[in-house]
Image (cartoon, rainbow, N blue to C red; front, side):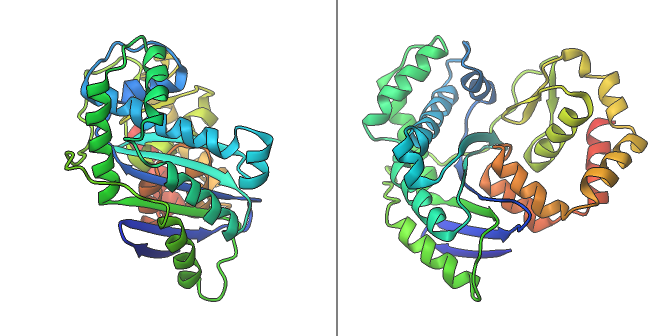
Length: 316
């Protein structure tokens, strides 16, 4: 794994030759609302009308605009080679990830386009913010939009993490290659820090019956395991996993957390591959984790057995 920094952006990259493409992710701090994020992904009403909710709507508007710009038309696809775009939000960090062709040129081009759109206060985003607000059954507020834009801009101006993982050739001197990519991309990242408040981690809300309280890369790991082991389609909601079937909570989760059952999963699904790099790619490619937390996971590089202990400790 290699890392470089330019201005307020840190770019980290890891090579994984067993996949056909490259996943790229950017992330920044966001004091948002997990249930609003989930409602936006599901396109269903949400009663929360807090300031944190409005910030989440604007952050999601950034994702929606980036997704549209990267792959909305056949011409866009030809230019960007981008096949998927996902949002993620946990531990007070909002992420946008996408998959593209397996070369640094495609990484540079798509990253530059994304950076160009990371301007929360631009007037073009207000219309998207209005549409998303109406989907939630809420009324868009110009004052909330402007305040949220200032705060998100301040967060982006402070620091942005970028993670690249996949089948990419970094050359003989990876840091030189990565710095070339980052310097070009950063020319498009023009964010004014208008003295907005810096973001902090999301506060936990009321306990919910179908929620599993877990965050960070442990949340992404548990989400993959639950889906594989019980076919329950859990959804990310900030620092919670919302389970489709509330009956899964309790006895069923304890059964899933049984040491013997987890051991079989680890031996069959994790021990046979480079678990750290493959999971880092999966977290990013499937939009399960923001770039900053994927970097943290890859840096910690937990062994397959350690990952098993996390599953047992979380579910048992």
